[in-house]
Length: 324
Image (tube, rainbow, N blue to C red; front, side, top):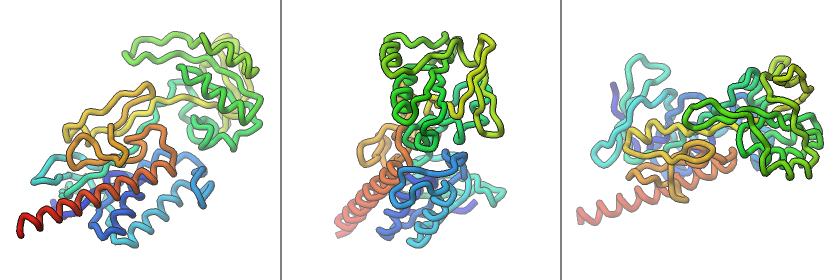
């Protein structure tokens, strides 16, 4: 077991974590990025709305980000943080490193949690197989690629009408596929109904399928049709779903933090700079903002990195005052 002191440990090496690391590295801070290698957008062919890098492959974006951060002296450790605890004004982490048999102990003065989130997908056969390809959730991330195509909206909560509204901007061949609601208490859900959104859907000319969807049929990762409970099927090219977004909060909770619940999931609360209620801990990206796209996550990381650097600079100056 080894102990290495750093100014900042960044947990998570996605856009938010790399954005924070670059900002801190450029401020001559010693930084370690700990990354388990599980990027949320790994299934996607391209990352969109990334200024100057439109459509870049997610793996290529992260590779470039790592290279840029390394150029400013940022260190990387491939592995997963097992435990985190306060330690003499900073933090002590134990990490299961990918290339070591024993756990590695890391010490850092500040933490940035860029741990991302988990998309909890509807339990409909075929959804997971097509996820990130022809099964999608965000019209801004993937909508252009399915413009003018036959799009089904898998309806399981109140977001269905909103998704229909946005995807209708991209295609006039949108159909609602009724699903089943998923109550938070785990009780069996009811069949989705349009309710007060019926008038909006009618005005858009978006039909509702004749029965709930029971499965998606795919050719590889490409949706071909939806199978309905009444035995009929509907030919489709893409399906939009509404996952629950559950931030990875385990480390935050180990440090005494309380995640906040949201109608769409769970997240780490933080102020505009990313500072959380836990002293010395910042959060950035999807862990803190469930709706953040790639560029927004990277920007939040830069903001958090700048805030942490300022916090450390003030602490260093106060120590000098105490000595004087």
